[in-house]
Amino acid sequence: MIALAGNPNTGKSTVFNALTGLNQHTGNWPGKTVLRAEGKYINQGYVYNLVDLPGTYSLLANSVEEQVARDYLCFGRPDATVIVVDATCLERNLNLVLQVLEITSKVVVCVNLIDEARRKNITVNTEALEKILGVPVVATAARDRIGLNELINAISNVANDRLVTNPYVVRYTEQIEAAISKIEPIIKELVGEKLNSRWLALRLLDKDQTIITKLEELYPQRDSLVTKVGGELWA
Amino acid sequence: MGMSQVFPTRLSAILTEIEQLHPHGNLQLNDSIVNSIYNSAESIAQQVVNQNEQPRTDWDKRIDDILTSRVFGFPSMLLLLGMIFWMTVAGANVPSAMLADTLFWGQDRLTELCNVLHAPAWFHGLFIEGVYSTLAWVISVMLPPMAIFFPCFTLLEDLGYLPRVAFNLDRLFKKAGAHGKQSLTMSMGFGCNAAGL
Ligand SMILES: Nc1nc2c(ncn2[C@@H]2O[C@H](COP(=O)(O)OP(=O)(O)OP(=O)(O)O)[C@@H](O)[C@H]2O)c(=O)[nH]1
Ligand SMILES: [Mg+2]
Image: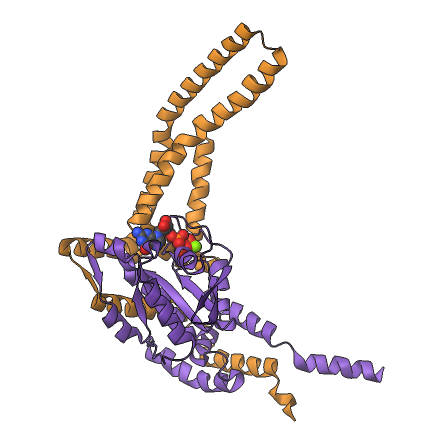
């Protein structure tokens, strides 16, 4: 399972179509994809299920799309996540990349619209970016199918654990870091390796109600279930 | 046994601990988190992006600082959006009137045509007075504002201003539990109201 995330209008659906041969709607305005679309492609005998997520500027779950994308990345546990970024405004796009890297380390960054960037005289040093972010970075022009083979290779390396990533970690203020280091160990004890405990610690410290609700949904009240069954037995 | 290890109990224990760490949630966490992320993104971008037209980047940066600063952010945003509304409303009147004139001139011609062809009255009533003139109204009232409003928005989008609006309004809408992006939808709504005038 491979997820496609990214800011709105960066060419996620175009990448999706190019890889799957499907015909998802693409359009030159943000918010074209609202619900997630799924498709698959085959590479070296493996079937990859691709999920096209709605475009978001962040993952702080302030809107429905953000929540859909975030919940998928964190609880859907894709084998790899491709973040499609716009080469012409990398800085804005990096905000999302950094947030995704907090959730999952199995990431490939796809610097799309590289043709557009060249036209605007912007160059992106993908090797340097790769070093800093600690995950593979591939330059593409999805509409012209440029760079897709490299992208497919990078995806397969990350999804099959042939490449161990070393994702960039955003450092917060001392106060927050201190709070995280207090909370993180007990969260790790609770969720194990299934979820990223640093990220979860941060979300809980931020009192993110949507995450708390989601956790309660995922791990239902087992104690109350036990008492109910017991009650029936006694009745 | 494992009973004390039940998930919800342990989760609420953690939440209690967090409550003790910062009792009233007044660590200003959200702002601070967003800031750290933005700063990291900025410094990374600086290291890997090379914009070859030097003066433009400086300008961009300066405009950006003004547009998203706390002091000037809101006034400049309101000014810009206001300007667009004004342009939409004022600018649309002229072509609106022109379109209406041409289209209703067309209706008159069609009426004459019906008379020449001796078309039944119900036909004329239904198609010409009903369908055609409704369409004519809708087109002449809606099209010009749309034709002005959307290119303006596209322009702002190209200039990268819309995300900034979203960023600006983020704090404000946060308090209402909503999101800055809704401002875009909201102003679209205004646009339609303006078109409705
Ligand atoms: N020049 C150029 N344009 C591209 C490229 N990739 C995509 N586009 C164009 O960018 C626009 C947006 O593409 P989409 O694939 O719809 O973007 P998206 O990320 O799915 O957008 P949302 O679903 O709204 O988040 C379309 O008009 C594409 O044709 C590219 O590599 N180069
Ligand atoms: Mg799309």
